[in-house]
Image 1 (cartoon, helix red, strand yellow):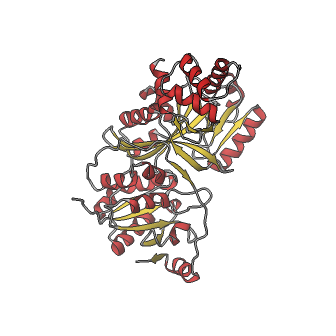
Image 2 (cartoon, chains in turn yellow, blue):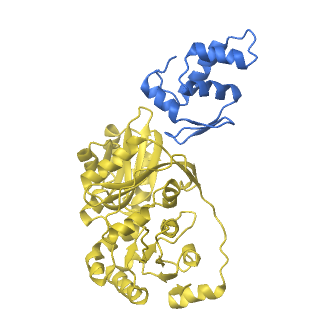
Image 3 (cartoon, chains in turn blue, cyan):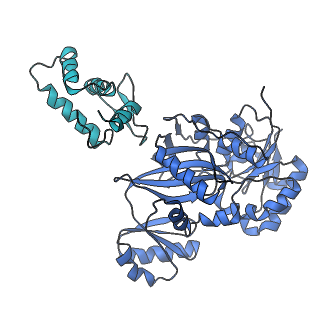
Length: 352
Length: 89
């Protein structure tokens, strides 16, 4: 006997561009689950986000206020969408919006909208600034890292972390620098865009792997799939990838869940050096754009997160098909101009 | 053959056409007919003498030094991290 699920699920990140948001991949995953019979509401930030026009995947779409407008605007908009659609849960998928949703979690629950996200403390623990602390606690290798707020510190730093090293912005962007002149230029460029502080990390050579995993919030990992990107775009985004078999990668995410009691999906970036040392580089607190690969490999992690959000206790997903690949495709959706008009003028669109 | 090498070889996916997938790194390779033959025998746990005999039986090897060809191929596998560095037959 199978049970059908008729939830109304809102998904963000519909910007399936050359730097794709994860939303469309998450929606395809939900649609793919044989027991999911509910409705999917696309939550977009721009009238030309491609997912808004994916009428075969979403039932409706709504434009959302930008995260910079603050949580009152977000709450108000979700209240409206709840009233119109009966929204049961939201799967936010973009870095910039996660903290706003975390802040609203209790209020949304009272409105009858569920989330399955890390707590504020967990969310901050995985930040680039604090990840080394988690790694120390978890006994995981991490690149030698220093947080820099003053440009003068760079002059002494190379004694501690020799060139070349990586200079990262607090939220985004990384430059490999080989000289103090390059470091100074990267410091000003990065702080101009992302503010202070910057992160300086030793430059490690090796193979990078990504793991999508889900923590249940009680210290257990309920599923996880490791992947190696086999083709990158000029922006460094994965355009093809393959599921790999390396038990150590899942041991790292399992250990991360155990130490942080992580609640929700996360993408871990791990670098394996020639000496077979595994360094945890970053943890992104959300689904990645390649989420649908996991469904192909046998783990429907968005559906599992939806179950957890709705208070269910899904069985852990332990198996996946090694060698499953994805190769992304870019195609033109044909859109009638009146659909764009509807989105622009009303801020919403309904297909079914 | 030690267990680490046995597991490594067992996990390599090798097709009839010589397409090789390393599930640990995600890398793919193409091996020729001779390479495929040697690799298949390695996966079956055969030793150097057996591989040499099978090679002579199945290929027109003449007086060539089959044994050194096999070792050369094994070194190639090691260089590509498909076999542990300490692997020996």
